[in-house]
Structures are given as structure tokens and as C-alpha cells.
Image 1 (spheres, protein in one colour):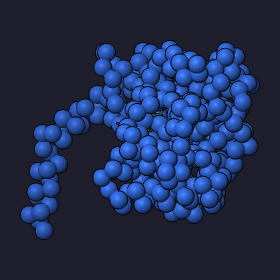
Image 2 (cartoon, helix red, strand yellow):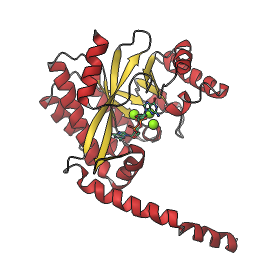
Image 3 (cartoon, helix red, strand yellow):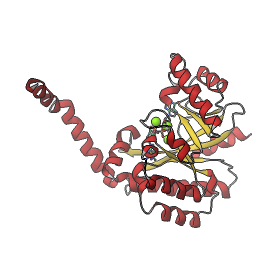
Image 4 (spheres, protein in one colour):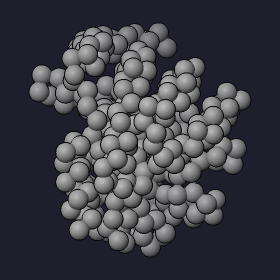
Length: 278
Ligand code: C2E
Ligand code: MG
Ligand code: MG
Ligand code: MG
């Protein structure tokens, strides 16, 4: 036992881990100033109806470009969530989302839905509802076009607090979806308890569809459940024709993935939108 512990300790001080620690420290420091330095931007990834090929929505995704290099969200978002930087970053994303939606509605861009990711800390932010109310006053957009993507970790909190917060968001008219549905540890009871509008099939499932029958079954079950509960669906990470055909056959027509479009800056998104409308 003692020997094992000793071994663990050497693992703790392995050089790669020290590098990781350095890397983390650099990211944390970078996050302090990323916003004010203008390094953060919002990309949009279209969601399309596979049958008609029309854009049915878009997901807003945060990008951090430092010294010309993009740092993947998978690296900096978890750190930002840990340190609390996600509060300011997430707030910035929400603000941009309102501004965009307002510009779209004023212009001639009829985007039925704009989704933005909301992390646990943001959901629990005591100023969230005030902030949203202020934004709705400033940018009077149609609330039902705004969609917050929550993770199962959020939904799995069995507290009054989550329920109340979710009801407050619904009272504002905002739509809610569960991101990466089925990858977290949570009961299904929250789907009954909380008014969820949409489930997103995780890329982790989509990418296995061609190889793995079990994933086909799990995905088909999610789709059937969502439909019976009257929820909308979006499949994430759709890249191949096989995946598209399978998903459509089991009843999911809404797709988000590289097969249709990658996340892109606003100007490219507008061009993409204009093209598909012709
Ligand atoms: P997510 O919310 O599940 O977003 C979908 C991710 O899948 C995006 O990665 C998108 O670029 C990627 N994706 C979509 N289609 C495909 C595909 O066909 N192939 C592949 N390989 N990837 C595809 P991204 O932008 O790197 O974001 C990763 C995660 O970071 C997001 O996963 C989300 O959890 C988080 N994130 C991104 N922006 C924000 C934000 O503004 N706030 C918060 N709280 N989290 C964010
Ligand atoms: Mg998402
Ligand atoms: Mg997702
Ligand atoms: Mg994901």
C-alpha cells in the first residue's frame, strides 16, 4: 500500500504534469485580460434541416485567439468555469447574442433560433435574470428565438434553486435545451420536472453510429423519447452521409455538424445564410 502511494506521488510530480500546471497557470493569467484585449470572439455554427437544407438555427461558440493562435474551448472553458472567469466571458457571449439577434431581426435575416451555452455558474448567478431583463429592454428581440444550452450537470442538481431559475428563464420566454444529452451522470426525472424544449444528441454518439450498433440503439431511444415528450432534437457532430441517413430514419432531421458547416465568424455566417436562402 505504502509502495503504491509512493508511486502515485512520483506520478504527481511527473514532468508532463508540471508542464500541465504551467500551462494552466498561463491560461488562467491569460483569461484575466482576454476580454479587455479583444481576444474573445463569437462564432456561429448553423443548424440545418436535413430534408430542406434550410437553416433552422445556430449555436454561438466562444473563441479565444491569443497571439494569432486559437486556444480550444475544451482547454480554456473548464479552467474558466473553475476560476469563475466564465461569469464575465459568458455574460459577454449573452450580450453579443442579444445584439446579433437584434441586428438579424432588424435586418432581413430570419434566424428562428440562436443558442448559447450557459454554464452552471452562470445559471446560478443571482444577477442573471436582471441582466437578461435589461438586455431584453435594450434589444427587444423575440425571446422564443433565444435558446440556452444547459448541461446535464446543471439539470441534475435536484434543488428548488435550479427549478426556480429554470422557471424564471421560461417566464422570460427563453427556450432551454440539454447539451450532450446522455453523456452526464443524471437521472431522467429532471426531464419531467423541468420544462426542457430540446435535447442535443452528443457528437460522441453521432460519431459512433456507423461502427457501433449499441450507439445506434441508444441514439434511437433518445430520439423516440424526445419525440414522445414533445421536445425538439438536434444531432451534433454530423459529418457523414451515413450518420445523416441514420438520424433521419430514426426521426431526427435537425443537424449540426461539419457536413453542413463549421463554426464561423459572423460575416461568413451571413454569406452562408444568404446562399441557402436563394
Ligand atoms: P458544445 O456546446 O457541445 O458545442 C459543440 C462542439 O462541437 C463545438 O466545439 C463545435 O465546434 C463542435 N462540432 C460541431 N460539429 C462538429 C463536427 O461535425 N465535427 C467535430 N469534430 N466537431 C464538431 P467547440 O466550439 O470547440 O466547443 C467545445 C465546447 O466548449 C462546447 O461544446 C461547449 O461545451 C463549450 N463552449 C463553447 N463556447 C462556450 C460558451 O460560450 N460558453 C460555455 N459555457 N461553454 C462554451
Ligand atoms: Mg452547446
Ligand atoms: Mg454539445
Ligand atoms: Mg460537446
